[in-house]
Length: 332
Image 1 (tube, one colour):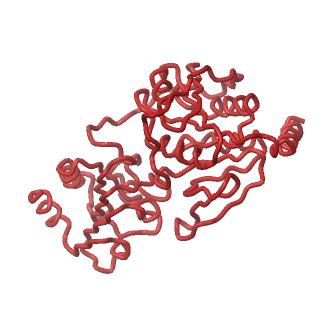
Image 2: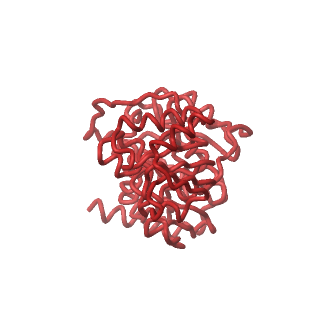
Image 3: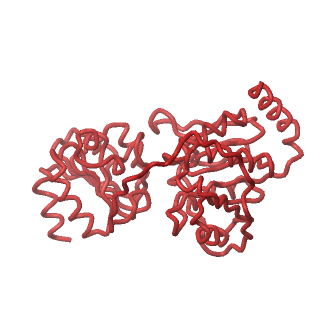
């Protein structure tokens, strides 16, 4: 019965869609101090769709973030969901909020940065609204047509949606970041949404580092299985600190237990596009290339001259990493 009712709502929304003016809801991600770079990229994507852009900020301690979001260039309004149930982005609770916001304001598009969190709640919202989400959007052609990668980034699909509500996640590397200053939007409370209460936050373990965030770093030094152990990643940490960069890893290195999975770069990890990407001891599997091949300059260090990573590298060094990396670090 509920599914039938939701389909009927979707059909009625489709019939009215031509009469609706364009408007986009952007779900902000933040660290309680600042919105992420991915959020700024999502605002840029939303601006390219046309119409008003509303940013949704979640969290009981995020009033300052909401005020910051109001200053982002191109933002028309900000909604702040201040209930503590949104503090940890529990997917069921966020889903109900997005559905409530959609029903209250009739957005034509809902956009979120591609992330582990949005991969959890966006499909649920799609099921609730009876629309098909479009993930990892790299470019916007018009309000109905988008480009997204497929086959681990080896092909780009052009996708046209006829759904009443376009539900998108966008790759931050595909869009420039919107200016953090220049806007003057008003902040208002988000609509009330029913509490699901089926999932409870227990705890989290957060690794702290003075190095920049992997997805926003200007320089990334990444290591693979060629480093042979987690202790040897200290070579990369020293080089990264010299360059003011972040450290990443291939899936092989993560699966081997060398480093935690939050450092993984690739199709099933984080997608990065720094100014400089140094791949150390990484063979260059297609899954890894999907997460870093948009980097401005790629440097590969590998003793195997046939390694696929050299096919995408701007500069390649065929050498033993245990000799080359310390020498490079010393000379910087």
